[in-house]
Amino acid sequence: MTNLKFKKILIVEDDVDILFSLEMLLENEGYTVQVAENGAVALELIKNNGLPNLILLDMMMPVMNGWQFGLKVHALYGHLCPIVVMTAAADAQQRAKDINAIDWLEKPFNFKKLLTLIKKHVNADENIAENLNQAIIQLK
Image (tube, one colour):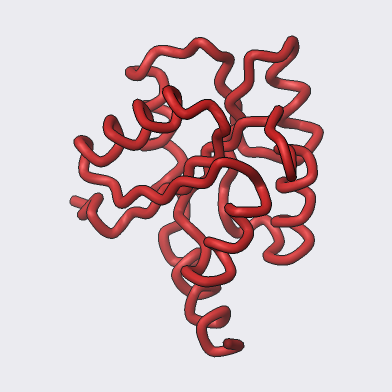
C-alpha cells in the first residue's frame, strides 16, 4: 500500500475558505499539502520544491489565473504532473480541456468525490514526478 505521507498535492486557490478546508481535509487523509493563492505563487513553489504528485487548480484567480498557470506548467514541465481543475464557472469540463487537465470538479463539490478523484490520479504514475523532481533539483 502506498504511503500517502509521501504524496504531495499542490492546491492553487484564491478563496481562503476553500483553500483552508481542502488543506485540512487532505492533511487529515495523510497527504502532504502545499498551498498557493495564485498561479505565480504556485510556479515559485514548484521551482523551489519540485513537482507535486497532483495539482488542484482553481481557474479564476488574480495575478496569474488557472489558464495562464496551466499553460506555463505544461510549457516548463510537460504533462508530468496531473492537474484537476476546480471551478464554479460554466462547463468545467471545457475549462479542463482548455489547459489539458486530466480531470475537473465543479464547485461546489463534495469531499467524497474529490477524494475519489485524487486517489485515482495521484497514484497514476508514481515514478514520473519523482524522476522530474530529481532533474529539477540537479538543475538548481
